[in-house]
Image 1 (cartoon, helix red, strand yellow):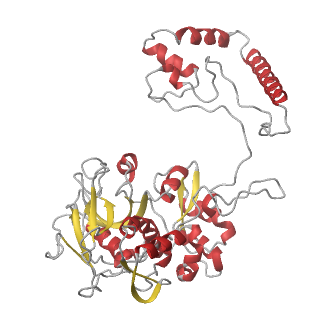
Image 2 (spheres, one colour):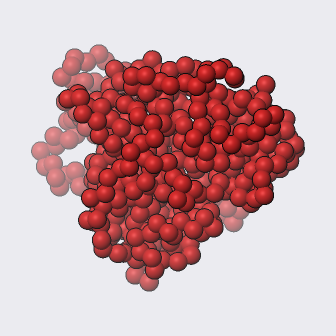
Image 3 (cartoon, rainbow, N blue to C red):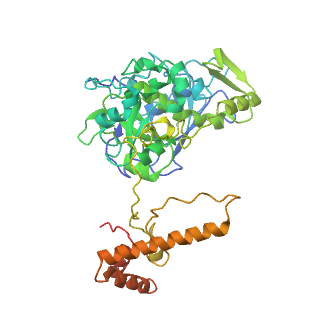
Length: 473
């Protein structure tokens, strides 16, 4: 079993969860400034959720600033532009609102260079921060899978969402995003593959670069709300354990309470290199405010300025960012779902990832709402119920085509009314068959009458249940 290497900076974070160890306030942030500029010098503005009164893990901050300044892991912080080096005590949490980040590669009189975009960032092979090496790798993950069987491989390995342990609505999430396959290839990330036979753009689909997440968490992950990174956690018994935890990058009280600084459930075979790349991909959009301040900046990059730092004008920076801005979002997947010869949907999902399970055939069922918290009972009417409290099942007929210039509107209206009548006839027959005593009709009459008057607690519960709402007690 591989273990974490010693961390370059000792730090401590509580392993317990809740309001007493983290912050859920969106205004708790820390600004990291560039000492080479007098004005408009905020390089990064990061969420500070590691302390209930606002704070950020010291090592996380060092790595973040090191990434955007060209993998300078030996940097340090000061509270003033020419102040003394900050050496946090106790839990190694930065608590001030402003710090200056100093790069060891800075030259007197010249602002140290900044990497402008993820595509310009060169991966630090053989120079990763010590705590990122071999994160989660284990000798127990030995079976090699092809890219075509990625879904099977991750279901076998992870079995459930690695954040929530949920076993429903699972998706295969890429650590280094699938749309960054060009960056992946040019930075030779195939060095970290479990299956060395994968080549080209398909190499990004190796098991070391994917994790099983619930669909809503996958969406938050791709929206850069959080990342997975290593921290050393202090437990109540006084012991310290290195763990891969969820770290929030954007404000979200719910995600913070549930997952911030909470270790992932065991994952064998993740690559620390891929996780570092994901951290970088999430960070770089945050320096756009620094770049777009209508003033020259000293920049560098693997393609932009391979021979060293160069000063770029404000207009050159704007043109650069416009050219390298991402053109695709998660909702615009590189490969749309298609139908194969058997009529099944293609298993490749959004953002070029594979769904955790094959797409099942469409099965129209009545949808139920979660117990609502809105005051008015009428506001709780669930999907599939009409404004009058009568349930209307989803249509069993194909949806009509959109309106067009060659379709007569009156014919469309007639078709819609006819379909509605057929649905009502079907529903009436089903109710007569399943409820010969007429209990349903009596209940409908009660629902109509009760909705217009005050109700006691038992009646309110009956009203919600009658409208298809699940009551959670």
